[in-house]
Image (cartoon, rainbow, N blue to C red):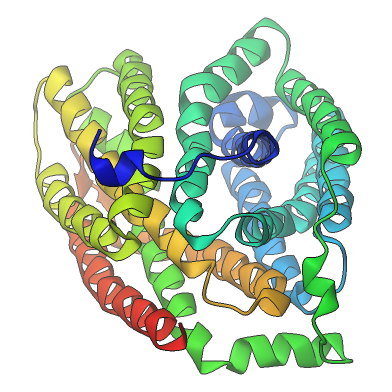
Length: 409
């Protein structure tokens, strides 16, 4: 361990509890979102749904989350963040329970919309709490732990969810997740302290004015644009990665869990290290290094054909290290952009941009990538080139964000 990394101040016991709690909440959100895709093969025949209806159920969650995040942004800084988190997390748990009890297409569609309405706000509250409770030199480590929730969902969440579905029914994963979520809500209510320092700062009288000021503040524009670009690139590539791995690279369908398992384990190990490096050496250098690694690995990955399983695992693992080396320092840097009295609104808008950009990117990628007569994906390399381009432009925008923070300091 270098002198810079070892000199970083340690977290208090309460800070460690908060980090673990926030990471657990992110884990629950990601699992709830990701479960729909692998359970589709069970849900569609059980509820007599067409592929088009199932696609509507999946996209309804993302769009309702994005729209609700934007609509509630004006109110995000007017309450104790603990109470706000508890309210929306309770709604998320109820929505997840509703998903587990749904017995028709209409019921599941409405349940996913309700779940998305509440889930779309939770992520922004988590980031606002992280910015309120942790200083700038600690946020890299915080984001490093929180972002490992994505990897943990691959390694632990999805296999367990599929096991429960295979040994019970497709309802079971949602019911178990709702029960675990209820326990998490009790932890928030009983053990988390109020997060209300921002309420001491004067705010606009109108919630709409608060949102409008957040949207029109020039210092926020580069951060919003970078968020949209980084999300767009990822959501164009990831939906087709499994089909590309099987159909173009010749990897057996039964070997896909091995690819996801090894990639997830690698990310779990490297995520906290990336966060620590961001605090020790600076968010911007780590972000640029991650962007360079992402560009190289995406170019290699989208041009692969008929390779061995170990090679696919290695490429995927390094690619995700690059992606997380962008994401973790970016989030640690961007949460410091808004003033404390606007953190809730700023993160709510950012979350809405992520959801909506992801939905649009998936639709655009679906019009670019084609399935050939031999079953292989065509024009997948074009999606890779778009990700490279968005990464380069996002790099310039993040540099602008850093300049703005330094000028303000």
